[in-house]
Length: 439
Image 1 (cartoon, rainbow, N blue to C red):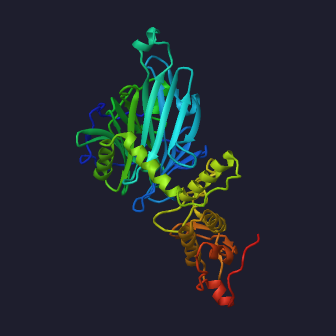
Image 2: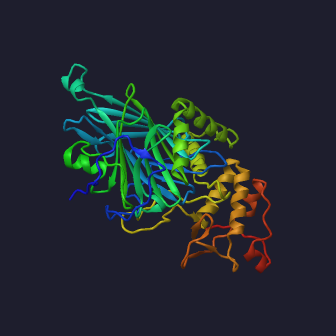
Image 3: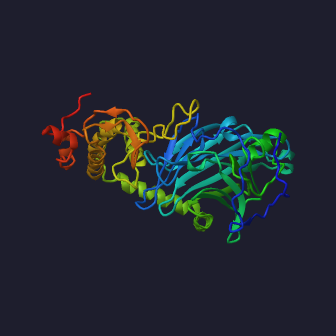
């Protein structure tokens, strides 16, 4: 049964200052942020002051982490293409896609979706100066220009946002609001807020409960956007925006903040900058990061050279800026479709961190390797062992498996100019230096 708001549809939205929390609402029982489909790509800004990360899977944006790498706030941001006359297609399910970086090793992502009726090109990047993700979407209708359907029922592009604030779909609330004359989608849970805005401004926007009154359900039920609700009670929510395509192109910004006004301001400021300018700045920062790394030997084949650069970028992406040396193992949750687990592999695994430190030494990233060694020393338990995995700021609550994997081998540390700490608890207790690992 479809749940509909008792209020009339509101296209213009309301001021973000007018929206107040209300009692719990409805929605699908699937609350967890874990995804069955695992990420294919990663984009990450390099600023030392802000922190965030976006993953790509099935050609759309999957989990987006903010303000730390172990806190996913978005399940996905996808797209529907429709003609408002019976044809509609969810691009991640119906189109084939190709994902690539702007250059080898650079996590500025280009996605092409191919479908017999349309082609959708996406460019996705983060921002060096703000807590936001940028997306440029270009839609091309593949019908013959002489086909009367093309003029009578032009293709429309819809953005679908599925918040999972605080790593959960429970008690999220969403609304259509305006700030500084711009209408956008908002979602909030406690002190975490996101705002989705676009340029040109959307034609229509709506929020609803997943599986009941959200935008995807409207298409699944009626084949088009048949309702527009201005707000929801807390629950498992989703938002949808019908984008206006200037010359077939729209720019979207998903911004984060601790208050609606903060997220809205970041979104408005980002849309004041042309996407191409932001894209070039983001790519330029990644080029600067790659410059000082140890060059790949000339004897290495081109395919492996790309893998080398990509591996270096992955290590950079997985490093948390708030805690130097804390590098999560992966952004995947292989068991996400079978049980709730807020950590998955986006935790700091002591064993994996040792391997990462060795890779950083090989890359010539001495500073990053020293930070990793310092983090290992600081996170060692009093009896000399390391927990198997932990959040970047410390062990998870409850019983944890232990790991006896020792810190970075002394010889590797020396190669990157890192002194072997004498404060290693277990080594100091045993009155011997750290041993190298061979396992």
